[in-house]
Image 1: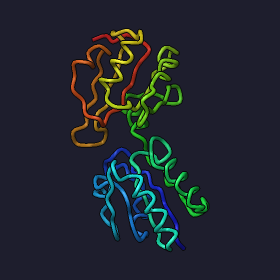
Image 2: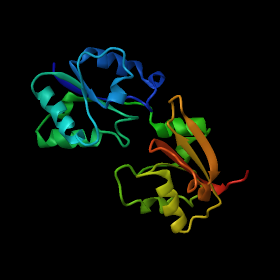
Image 3: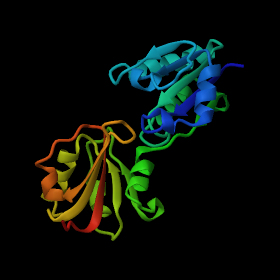
Length: 217
């Protein structure tokens, strides 16, 4: 039976794949995802790569292929329901009158979960926020002073987020941790002050943790 699987692949390392994800990819006709995501699987029948520029086109293709009778999976970094492709696919499915009963979501480990684990934060006591794809990030100001750690995916870069917070009254002495390229060989976790983030270089693959207290060396 044709079906569309949306698979969370975790933060990016093969060791964080679930067995369910591995088994599903083995048994579908076509797997669609970024080449970085595709490369962490050992067994794939047919792969179609995508990038940010053709994301919408390839997600539409995934639904069309299932309508044509194929079993298809779409790979989503982290968990599909948190800054993943689930929302987009559900919108496309609705536009094409594609029955949601033919969609199965297989969750993955979010980089925010891994950041919380690496820093020993009980993440049910933290503010969990994503700003991926958002220009309006003012929402974070409602949470950074509520006494809990804020674990966030920045909209652009951690520098931009740090500048925004500093420009909106958050102290430069606030303790922050930047988790870069989690689960990859070049993983880096840096704890410093908010003002020092401005003078540091980080890639776009970062999770930012803003604590309530001051940074102390």
